[in-house]
Image 1 (spheres, rainbow, N blue to C red):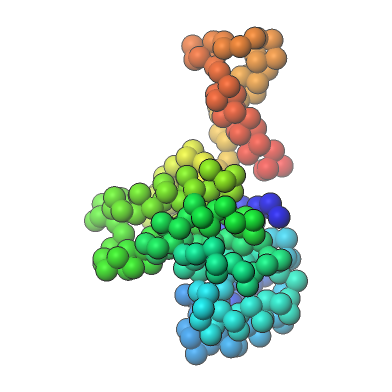
Image 2 (cartoon, rainbow, N blue to C red; image 1 turned 90 degrees about the horizontal axis):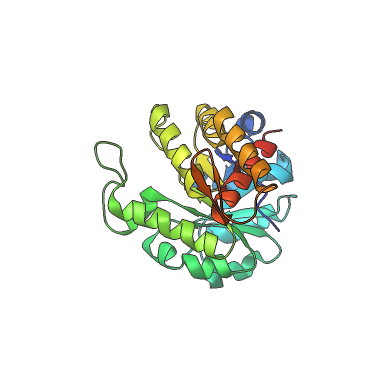
Length: 270
């Protein structure tokens, strides 16, 4: 199963079925969340809502609780009563945890120290379609108190984890998903982060509020100048052999792949 979601993935609490359709209208893909967004006492009801109010399986992901917990087993039992076949596994840290998810496309959420270190092994598993990282749980797993400096910039350990998960995903040709931007009102910061995610190779960015969706979509959308450059490079390549010069820039195979990526993002918007 290939990764068919993005570039914006909107979390929606599974215990709020009144928000399901609204989330699906606002975002290309929805993550129905049975984990952090739902209080433990409300999870049983959330599972029934998941079954009773189903969205399009092609654009819906279900985040389940960590493997080995009672909630995990109950979550899976509920998902099996639906048509959903893409699962996000919270706090993944071992390929052994994926045995129970055979038949599903799995997005592993590397959000603990152990999970980040296990990212290469998780990415190699055949059931995994994407990897996502999470900053807040990661820092909590280390005994820290904040993933960011007062300026909003990620601390070095979070930046390392972000890169490590992206590299593990890329090494195994799996998609990578950037973490949520928890400062909901900081749309400028979100835009900068999403633009960096796109340029770095992330396939999508997750978000927690509908207003963040449009910002992410815009960040992943090629600008007119980028599109014109990519079209020009590809056109010039059909008339050139080997390395050539285009608008003062050396163009070789990696640059051609960059241009092709811009065109793919443009096609995805159609």
